[in-house]
Structure formats: C-alpha cells, structure tokens
Image 1 (tube, rainbow, N blue to C red):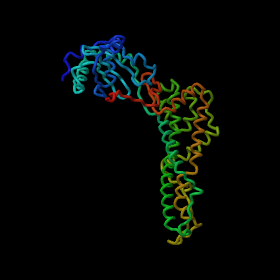
Image 2: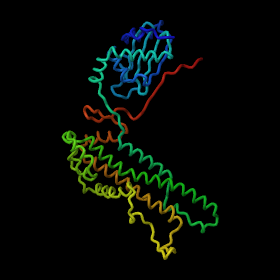
Image 3: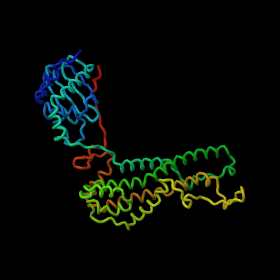
Image 4: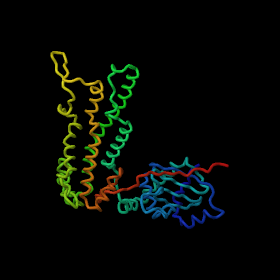
Length: 392
C-alpha cells in the first residue's frame, strides 16, 4: 500500500458537529487505525504546523479540556478527507493519529506520511514561526534541588528507621562470655550487617542535611529576589555566593515578601549556625582529632597499655556509631526543620503560601523571557491507550 500523493493536501478543518453526527448515523465510517508518533516529528513542530494550516484545535478533547495542564489529551485536531476522519491528539508521552474510515494504507506507511508533513512545513514556515514566537510561552522544566534532597533524605530516614537500630539494647556480650559460640557468631554477623547499612545511611543523611538547608536558602533567594538585585549581575551573584550565614542575614535586604527581618540571634538560627559549623569536617573529610577520637592507649615500645578496657562491641560497632553521629541524627534533622520553619514564619502569609507550594514540588518551570517560576504539571503521571475489544 502507498499513501496517495495528494492525501495531505486533501485534509480539511472539520466541523465538529458534522463529525459527531457522522458517528451517530447508521452509515457512520467503518474501520480505523491508530498510529503512535514519538519524536519522529517533534510535538512542538506538529502543533505549530496544524495551527498555522487549520487554525485553533477543534477536536472534542480541546473543546472539553480543563483549563489547566492536568489533562490526558492536551490538544487535538479533527480533519476530514475523502476516506473519513483524521484526528491528531497531543498527549503527555506521545502523539496519536486516529484514522476513522476505510483508508487505503496502514501503519507501514507512517514514515512516508510523517515525511510528507515535514516537507509541507516549508509552505507554512512564516505562520509557524509567528505562532511559536508570539503565541506560545517557552518554559524550561527543572528539578527543584531543595525538594530533590528532601525526598532523598526522608527516604533514607525511612530505610534507617526500618532497621530498628537500638544502640542501648543491641549490645552483644563478648564471645568468650557465651557458651553457644556458633549462635553468638551468627548474632554478631547479623547485627554487624544491620549496623553497617544503618551507619552508612546515617552518614549519607548527615552529609545531605546541610546541603538541603543551603538549597532551601538559595531557593528562597531565587524565588523572591528583588528586581533591582536581579538586574545587577554583581549583586545577583553576590547574593548566591556569600557565606551561608550572610545569605540568611541578608534575606530581607535581597528579597521581597518578608514581613519581619530575619533575626539571626533567634534560637533556631543559633542552633543552625552551630550545625553548619560542624558541616565542613563531615563534608570535606577534615581531620579533627578531638572530634574523631574514641579512646586513649599508651605504648612502651610495642607494648600497648590501655587506659581502660573496652568491650568488643565498643571497639567495633560502638566506634562506628560514635563516628557516624547516629545518636545525634534526630536532633540534627530537627535543627534544620526548625530553621526552615522560622525563616518561613518571617514571610508575609500570602507569600509564604506560594513559597511553600513551590518548595514542595520536585519539578518546576522557569520562563526565561519573564524570569518567572511556576508549577507546570501535577504530581501524578497518567497515561491511557485505546485497546481492541475482546473477540466474542
């Protein structure tokens, strides 16, 4: 089979009422097929082409769509031709072309059909460009770094809590104190694996907490930066690159929306400052003996004399617990949470609502032309597909 050479030129903008009437009548078109198009033709190019050639979308789904981006079908055109009806549907993951009627070709001809459409772009280049540049807003989708880190941290916290590590009650006596050595060895191995995983999770969480807090501050600056600061490249860069405590103290100077100045002497900020002071050792692997030490031992030549004896648990898993900061983790999470809540409390209530809504979204949009942030899509992803009815 082959697509007739003039097929594309015969497509006409359909009267949707006539289309619906044709579906209701006894002589309605029989037969049909659905083609799936991914990026063989970019959806933006196809949309501009159809709009330039036929006008605004006229399909049923375009007429009844919700006035937002939460639709399964975002746009559609229904066109008529000698053989029946052709509908182009723009969805979230693909374009579908529905043919209703007795068409003298099938999906093996899809490449030729799409090639014909691309060739026809040349006849509509000017109106396609006008639509793209003057009627459409270009947004850039990006990942919210604060929310990405927050989700990762709380996922790791769930995994850590699922291990049910109990430092006080998990202590195992030295093996020489037990009669059943095999059982004791198994217990050590099992507990060792649990703690090895748990302490790794703990270190990962503690390493990400200060980064998440800094991402929170940077997102606030990005969202609320005053226009005069945003316009000045040097001031804009300085607002992001200054020391974290200066960025926090300067929030009301560089940003709009603050009903009161940030008080860095507030207890939430004091605790956060102490927390941040400790981050460099953790994040950069700094050597601070006072913070890393866990015991004293004396030597006479090669002979060790311990200041005090420590159990096998204390010298193995116990050292890991101390080094990882497992027992301080909940307090550190609370410090960061208290800090973010205090900063948000300094915002005007209406600004705070918008900020919190944006902060909780992983995927955001940015419009370069107007330097605007926005929420482009709902959190859920939905897809659907027409399937053949089961044969009786």
